[in-house]
Image (cartoon, rainbow, N blue to C red; front, top):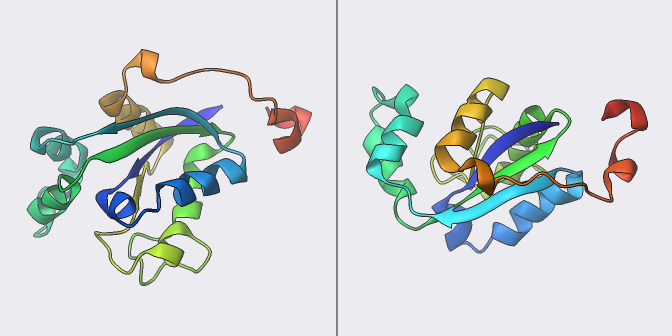
Length: 153
């Protein structure tokens, strides 16, 4: 099964959407394998968003991510990275389709409720950045047989 990172951003916490967002992923059939609240530092955010370092909004993005703690989550499932990205919707909340998390709850490109890994490779890197090995749990879900056909898992 594939694992992916979801960060519930300060906008998610401030607006009281943590339960709603995690509920959507769980209702889809993704298994929560790890979850914790933490404060992000400038150092961690500089590493995490290094690909945006030359953009004019880089410092503003980092500052916004440090306003409150965030909740980092590891979700697991078949095709989890792609499924989570589709569920999140496009980065700009004003352009995200209704029915997606950002389409339903965001009006901003920055204050857009969640960060999601954009590839299997980046998911592995990001999960290691935010979780120790012992903080991601492997367990059997009784629902698996009702989420996937036998030949899908």
